[in-house]
Image 1 (spheres, rainbow, N blue to C red):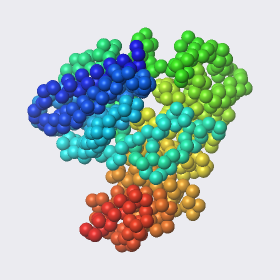
Image 2: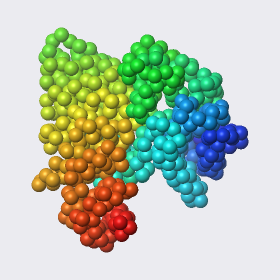
Image 3: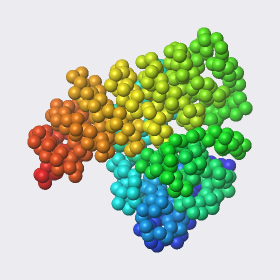
Length: 624
């Protein structure tokens, strides 16, 4: 099918979804306003999708080039719209006026999730490729801002509407930075520097880049009322570009997200969920089974290996695994051509077989060669993973041989650069072994283990799994006691993990505030940027805010307002503003410490963001 036709079909299908949602009946009762607001925002998608459809059916010379990104953004938007449609159905079926019952709690939780998914999917649309008009682009920007505010509002609204709701998201939107080695790296706060280091000494997966936004919170996906759940799942299961897309068996769908499970786990009630979603549910303070509402006797998550195997077989049969571009010994190149890699595959397969050799020297040589190959090219990363090397490398992480362990963890780090390999590494159960290396390996192994956790955590669902694995205390220890490179690796990983609200409390309990304060007061000033960057995302958390104040960090921040570099002053002002909002005691403290003078100076000579933060703080001081 021609590329332009594919985009046309995608846009037409998405338009049909929008029309179904807009023309549907709105429920009365408890969620009437939520549903009305959601439908009104989705209705504004119409003009955008019409322009994309018209562009796709035109004879414009660039129409075909849009197809490469079409499958990605359109699939994401379709999933988000279907989630909205299922949510509206669930809200319609809910008749209780009791805001504390289980169904109301799930539905309220889902409104936050759906608005987040819609905003995120809009951000991925390649406007330039479709030559979207400025008027429609402005309209989309408005819708995104509304969705973003709604997501944040649900974070605080739900605490009044239902118990144990999710805390408020960070105030700024998420952005992604495309890296030259095909890895997508989450951006960091305005005028701050990305934290990280090389995937290997010769292969860097992170470069220092500047950005203008704070990454937003990871959130759950799709969730519906348990009543009628199977019917909703069967009707709405994972359609993307075409209405006749293969329907996923209901038993393969996570009862929380209604998406295909990749890492199914069993909870104490015997129900099975996707690991990241049930962990997210638990992290939000819930102690009941989402499907049955029974209280969980324990929070143990047991892997459901049988179901995972059945799902994998079904995926292979229907060819719905993420394509690596490898088929019948031929690898698809970026220009669309194919090259024969059967010889390379045979050589790599022989190397992988030696990873299990009884001879120590043979294992050592093989894993060193795998490490070398994995850092050279994306093609090698695809081939190595395709030969089944990842589970074998994970097994080598627990070896007593320091050299093998270092090579194995660095190989996994290099392999994780290729996006599709991230899920394979997670499914191989690599995280606990990586954490073990992080705790007890050689310094080089610990450095690369920290970098591996960062690379894996770029996928939102992995932030949840890694955070619950015990990785954060080990990273904080490396942040305090590691080499310079190790500290930077730990800072990078901790920053990315703490984007997820549930991990902020874990970091505080692990002693991260003490470690960050030490970095701020280090006379060498070698990691002030990193410390301020992490503090800036922690300061919105209640426990972290209390710990920051208790550690006597405010005087240090005020001193940085006077003597720091421009970006240090900017972040110090942002953190102080966060600490002082709705807190008269902290506000009085910065007033006593003479913050008004450097803040006034900052309004005149600081960066644009620094001026805004300083001005806001001064207004609060005047009111005090």
